[in-house]
Length: 393
Ligand code: SF4
Image (cartoon, rainbow, N blue to C red; front, side):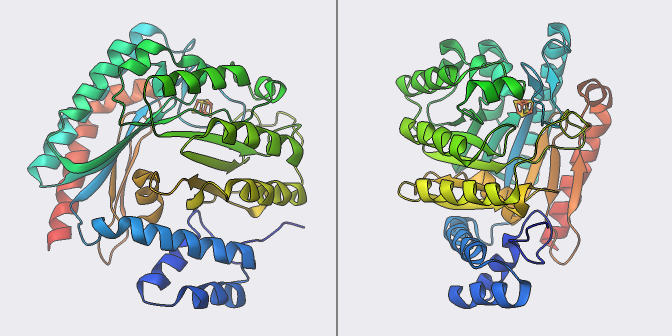
């Protein structure tokens, strides 16, 4: 039988209902009570939804009512190798030769410049930046420098801003790359598991020791805000392995930990028929509860979302020490402000009061993205312009 910890709440954002009720002035205890009674949500998940909604309400308060604030996602769709569960629009480095990567990079800089100028012209303000992919740390130090220069030259920056640079694969990091990133950036160094056998099975070419060394290097260079991702339910792992990975990661003292439930996508190796043994819902629940118990003394949950066929019907949860929550993650999931995506596979979404959201998706394939870039720029300008006009009307 499939577990339904979220009762009849469907979709990737189960927290929206709690957030809306909170905005309408319902007391938190009543919201949790109604989620249990009326929607069949487990008591623990109802409390989690309300806790996250309260945290997000507090963090988003300074942005409240400021519809000109926008977050930006920058896609660098290259990875050292393809993880067996991944369907992200990433191209392996072997598959995508250096000359082509440089062409992609030039196109990306062009899009950033064009979008930034249009945002400035329309009075939009950039308040949160996320450089993801893929693995942005596959860029070399000179490219990282050029990318961050192009982004910092964006005339639309708001004073109070944050940036995340995803350095997901530790084997891609070195001192010269890290030295190219301003120390105020939040880094994301993602082990997924601290067990070398698991890392080999899922197609990652790094070890747990690489994770420890990259983390120590980043700290020694002064990075004071580091996130680490772990996955519950990877092949051959039980709650015991997950507890052990978590203890090692907590021992490094990152500022945030994002706990994902394994949910291989259809377009991935595991989603496309390669055999793997799915963790039982009972074990997934046990691992998730164990993780929460281990994280609670240091961190609190601040955003969560679900995916299609997510393990145990559970959720992916972002945990953070207070004050180090990622605003971009909250804006993405809470859908309170526009998010503009640049680069191959990047999506843009804009809330329009009283209407369906306006959405735009760049092609996932890097070659197609480059080919279509001139028309994509026109589409983006038109989208931003129409959204801004509608928003002001
Ligand atoms: S590093 Fe991330 S984006 Fe790249 S293949 Fe693995 S899961 Fe996908």
